[in-house]
Image 1 (tube, protein in one colour):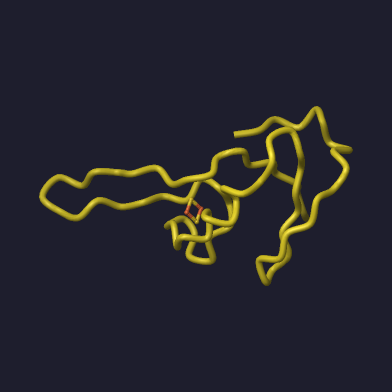
Image 2 (tube, rainbow, N blue to C red):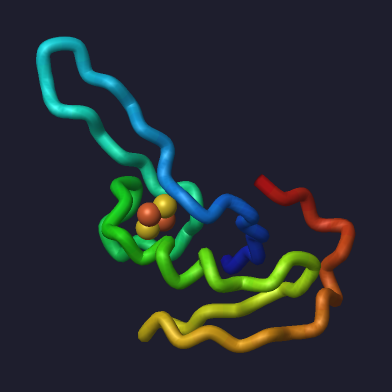
Length: 74
Ligand code: FES
């Protein structure tokens, strides 16, 4: 089974751990260390507003037509 998920966040969520180091949770979907952020979101910061991009397993980006306009984003 496969699914398409749109991600619009371009940075991680910081979780404070009492008595420990903070944990950074990936919100962009590009981290290879899910659920933790690995810094791959820096690529998403150069995305243009209003455009839709697809990334391959190597992290290469291409712009695609938004044929899934009704998909919920987060
Ligand atoms: S938020 Fe996804 S890699 Fe950092």
